[in-house]
Length: 282
Ligand code: GUN
Image 1: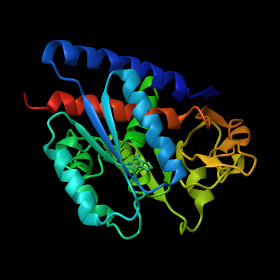
Image 2 (image 1 turned 45 degrees about the vertical axis):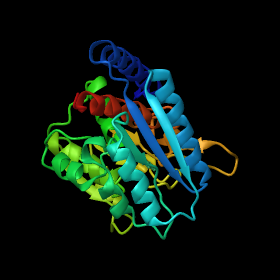
Image 3 (image 1 turned 180 degrees about the vertical axis):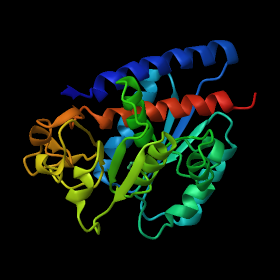
C-alpha cells in the first residue's frame, strides 16, 4: 500500500511554479497577478482565501484579496469583475464559492473573462475541457490527475467510480477521467446501490462531504482510493469521506486527509495563474 503524499507533491509543484514565475519576470517582465473575491464572512471560505493569498506570495505571484460584504448586490459584484477583467496586471480572477443566495453563481462565473478564469468554472472552459481541448482545469480534479501521473498510475481501461457530481469536483473529475480513457461511473446521493458500483471499481474518487462514508467492505482488493472530502469532526479533527484506517487495508494507493488532495488544489491554482500569465498579450 502506498500513501499518495499530496503535501510533498504540492511542495514540488510550488517549487516548479516559483521557477516559472522567475522566468516570466526575467524574460517577459511579467509578474503574474491573481485577484480573489471573497463575498461574506463564511469562516471556511476566509481560511481558504487566506491560504491562497499566502501561497501566491511564497511563489512570487502578486495577489489581491477583494473582500465584499454579503449585503452587496449582484450588479456590484459584476462591476468589480468587469474592472478586474480590464486590469492588465491581473492574470487570474477567482470568485470564492459558495456565494450568498441572492447572487446567481452562473451569471457571476460567466462574467469572468475566460482567459482569466483560473478556476476553470466558466462554461467556455468547461466546454473546452469536456471536448479535451486546452483549457483551465478546475484545481482539485487537475490536482488528482497530477497525482496519478506522478505515481505512475495508468488510467487507460480502468473502472473509475466518482462519488459526488458537483460542478467543482465530481463532474470535471469524470470528464478528465473519460479523456484519459478510463471507464467512468458517476454516483450521487440517489444512487441505488453504491456498494455495487464501488466494488466493481479499480479507482474510487469520493467527494461528498460525509465523514467515513467509504468503508473497506465497499471496495475490492488493490483499489486506488482518492479522498477529496475534508470534514471537521466535533473533536476538531479533520477527516475525509473515506474511513482511511479501514480502506487502507485493501488499497494499493490511498490519499490521506489531511495531506492528500487538499494541498494539491492550491498548487494547481498557482499553476493555472502562471498559465494565464503566459497567455497575457504583451
Ligand atoms: N469553494 C470550494 N472550492 C472552491 C474552488 O476550487 N474554487 C472556488 N472559487 N471556490 C471554491
